[in-house]
Length: 138
Image (cartoon, rainbow, N blue to C red; front, side, top):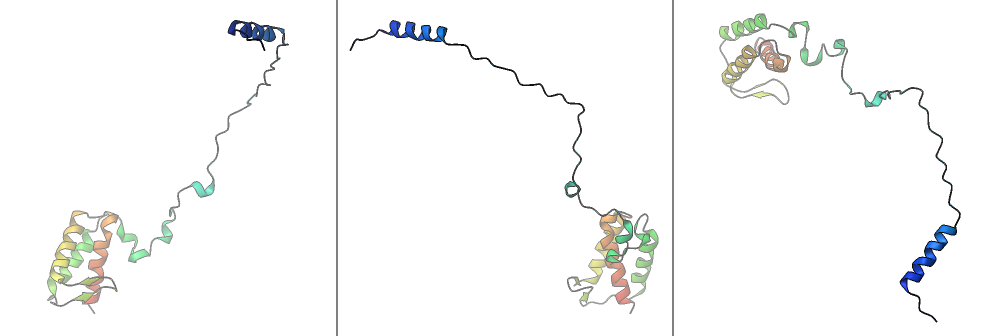
């Protein structure tokens, strides 16, 4: 076996490359876009929220009076609680709402309602006071 030098190997490989037929490369047919269409969101992708106010009007005793100024409702509550003697024991508004100190409950809730008058986030304070008033008036 004869030993080949690196230069001989390179010369032979270059000869092969030159003698082979070149490969024809055809470019693909270009894609023509007539118009760009934005994808429409699917119905299940949209956030679920209540838009019909008629379905929420009776939740937690809400009425049309809930929005806006609560001054008249607050005044009625203050007048009522100032006109009666408050009990010293517990009062249960519901299964999960127990008032242990009625005076503290009324003061803290009235503070919140007056500070955030008309803000729907704080309507629960007003509703609890009205619920206590209806229980106490029985």
